Length: 115
Length: 113
Image 1: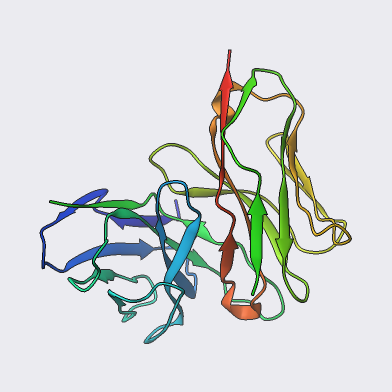
Image 2: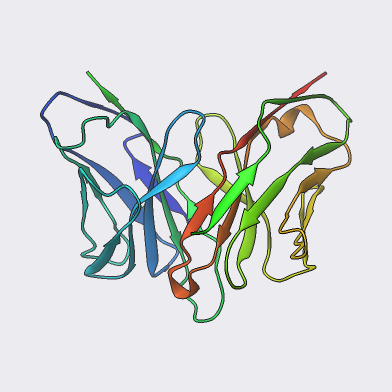
């Protein structure tokens, strides 16, 4: 079955440490996205990528970095510059289609906590 | 910029009750509208969508109609079940090929026996 796989499901970060969240999709989607979800809030866009080797900042990119070396993969690094990283992180993907807005498909998320 | 406003939760209903979750939006142009559902500890699943005015999206007994005149996309279900307990997000995309989503804050639904 096609889908989006996020790993790990739970992740713990020590102070001053960088951590990388994995996101892999086998849907053959061109676009991929990272969102952050905090309790009682909607999802906020961190980064997105419409094509390999290209990505754009979303609304809350500070303290995060991404890469898009392969179509299937869009890892997110939470750097030590992100002072409040505890959140639920969701990866999504979608078809890129001129003139129409395609729905996004989501992974099951990674919950990041600070030790 | 674009924005989505949802009714505050939680919404608590008895099984078989009628559900309405209100959603209004602000956007330029012709956005597409979506409802996503999130079960505890999971990611979001697309529930239904509508891409132009007067379209009705429907799935699993849920419905929502794209009302451009009132900029609304209210979610309804005639008879809820305990298994419908989840958080529901209204969202729009209005960015052409980027398909960037703007979400509401979500509405928690709790259905009791």
